[in-house]
Amino acid sequence: MILVLNCGSQSIKWKLFDPSPLTKGEGFDSNLKVRKEGRVDVFEKRNYEKILLGELGKLEKYKKEIKKIGHRVVHGGERFKKPLVVTKNNLKSIEKLNRLAPLHNPFNVLGIKFSQSVFPDAKQIAVFDTEFFSALPEKAYTYPLPEKIRRKYKIKRFGFHGISHEYAAKQGAGIIGRDFNNLKIITCHLGGGASITAIDKGKAVDTSMGFTPLEGLVMMTRSGSIDPGIVLYLNSKMKNLDFVLNNESGVRGICGLSDMKDVLKAAKKGNKKAKLALDIFVYSIQKYIGAYFAILGGCDLLVFTGAIGAGSAKIVNMICKPLPILKNTKVLSIKSNEELAIAQKIRLVK
Image (cartoon, rainbow, N blue to C red; front, side):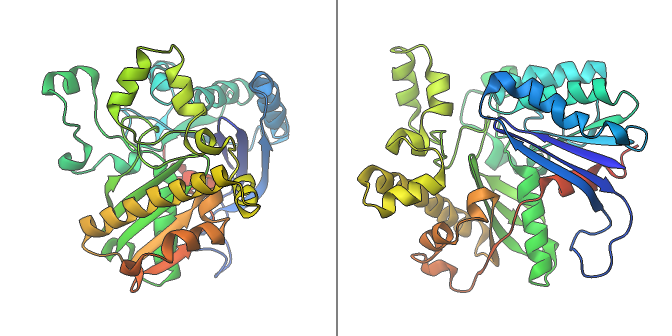
């Protein structure tokens, strides 16, 4: 059996897969059947370890059957570009990347460590969100900084949400009955974090998140791209700028709300700040769609995924309706299934 553990900063999700064939028509990616699954939201970080142990405890009765445990790890840096069997040494290297994805990697690493403790005989395998973007064109991943600085500090565009973008794009291609490797696709992962990716003939050619998951689209609590001069200016004025940019900015910074359902309700009631936050969120996505449409030379398929992308037809309509360039583009909303995508990736890992 295969267990996939997806430890996020605000939730813990897991799925236990029985690798027996599915009957025809039950799924585009097939061959893995969910035996058991769970999800718990974590609102107080101080309770995270207790909750995680509780979730893993629900699976101890399968201890002898679970042979592989897959872990979503957001940042793989330059070194980790494929699914990786976790060892004591490479786990230390993964842990060093925590500072580049402070809202994600520390919890991913915690999931690995606790799984090692509860399931010592299972093979722990890390699957990286950055993998899908490891072959970005040089013109897309290079930042216009002095070469000596780029080399010394390993600064480049890594991209994130890759597991979700790849899964949604492949699912979308299957739904419209087209070859994934012969399509121009734009995928929008919209949730607490948000990113957009341009895919040409099965390869990611650009993506909105960069060296860290802070760049790009306006997000629920993250600023997205802003003038670097603002960062330099504020850094001389305040001490907790990193926290502000990651946790108090974006939609929350505009209207004080960080749940899109609450933002939509407030905007409907006439709350001007909520309406402005919604307009800014949508506008940032529209700009990227336009840019990627130009880069790809058109778009056969536009896919929305993530809690907002697959859960809010209203937001998808707000984004797409004013864009005449999409008149010949298929538009789909697909529920994310990172756990299935991870299980598929680790099945053949030895």
